[in-house]
Structures are given as structure tokens and as C-alpha cells.
Amino acid sequence: MTRRNSVFTVLAGIGLILIFAAPIGPLPGFFIGGKSTPIPEIWSDTSKVDEILLKVPGTLPRVVIIWVVQVEGQLYVVGSGESGWVQRIGQGAPVEMRLRDRRYSLTATPVTSGLESIITAYKDKYRPSYPDIVAGFPSLEDSEGAYGVFRLDPRSE
Image 1: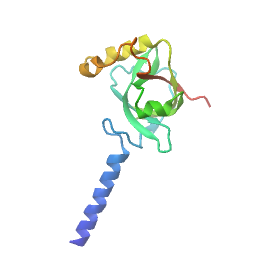
Image 2: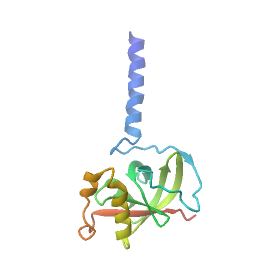
Image 3: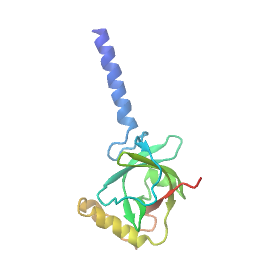
Image 4: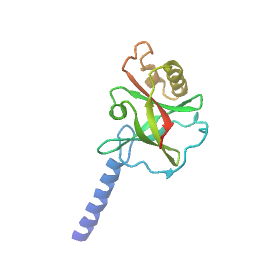
């Protein structure tokens, strides 16, 4: 009986570690996974990709599940200005992105101008699947500080 309890305790402990280490829904994790891949010259079409994993820096890096939009060949992520991952990136930071089964080393660069086309593309992409969430987004005029918008650029070596 003691051995069975020990095995169960170990398995339960491993399960808890995996639950808290991998991102699940709105809960961040630590592991991003995926195969490290060179950045392509041109990103493939992401219109059918709802979510990516984004690993942001910190004493303990954080991996979040986030939406992505592509505008004029560039990839963008948008988050609440109050969210932890947006605050960690701040004025720009190295990040890792997992798109499907591939992981890319990038730089998240804050975008402060030309936001209308990015926010419009973001709303247009996600409105059909998430109408209630998109309806709650503030208008661009009311969005001062409400959004963190980041372009995902190749890292300069």
C-alpha cells in the first residue's frame, strides 16, 4: 500500500508541475516547446491561426497564449495595457513565438502609430469567432493606454 501511495504522489506531483508550467487558457506557463526555426523572409498566411504561444522575458519567463494578426506581411500581437506580458515587454524585448510546431526568436517592438489598420484587422479576424470579446474592445479614440500593440520583428544580432 505504501508503494502505491508513493507512486500516486509522484505522479500527482508531476501532473501539478506540468499544469503550472505549461500555458493553459488564460494561465501563463514557462515552457514554449516547438522546433527552433529560422525566421522566414515572408511569413506564411496566418489568417487561419487563432492562437500562438509567446514567451516573454522576466526572472521567470512567462509563456502566454495570445492572438496574432498579420498586416502587410508583418505579425502583430495586441494585449491589454494592464496585462503582465504587455508590461514585461514594455518598450520592446526579445521574445519567442511558437507558431504551430515551430519556435522563432523575435523582438517585440511597440507600435504607437498607424494603429487603426492593425486594430481593425485584429477585430475583423476575431469578430466571427469571438463576437462578445471583440465587442468589448475600446474604440481607437478611447484606447489611450488600453492596448499594448507589438510588431514581431527578427532579432538583430
